[in-house]
Picture 1: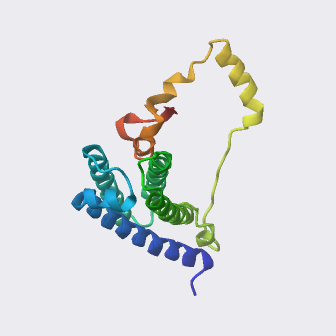
Picture 2: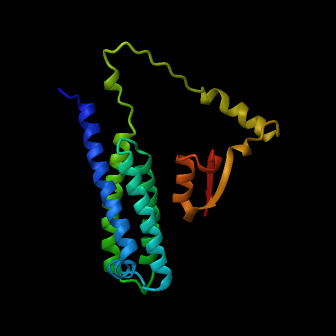
Picture 3: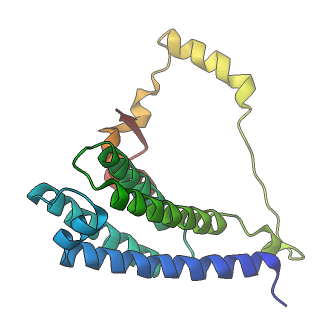
Length: 200
């Protein structure tokens, strides 16, 4: 009989596969019909918005293929959450525009919020350590944690005195509107990424 942990993981995997196929379908739609999609969403139809739709399509297609290739891993799902937040920011700024069809933009925003919630739920479920799977097995787990409260103050004092320079940890600085790219850099450890700092 399957444990509740195994059932939860299996359910999350099914959801992840569904989201992967959704992402592939959305990506194909964005690439094949950017003009129609712009009209449906209620955005202004111009070369720039068509180009943005195609870029989002490539991103969705990549995320979908990544999820379907590794449905048990949460990385691509967390990337989708980042992408969703980026898209919500775009739709939010569009809602403030007088030229936007606000009813359609609001509907697209509501749909995207629903998908974002599903992405986050699947990612959280797959991101958990299956502790139940190790019960009654001859395994030993060891872990450790830095005593943050003990070392934080003296560490900050040494940084302030110039004895320690932690800036080498920040390998990438990018604008806030490129958050999805920063997330990809960090999660996939691209371009020797250690830490990303985003600024508005």
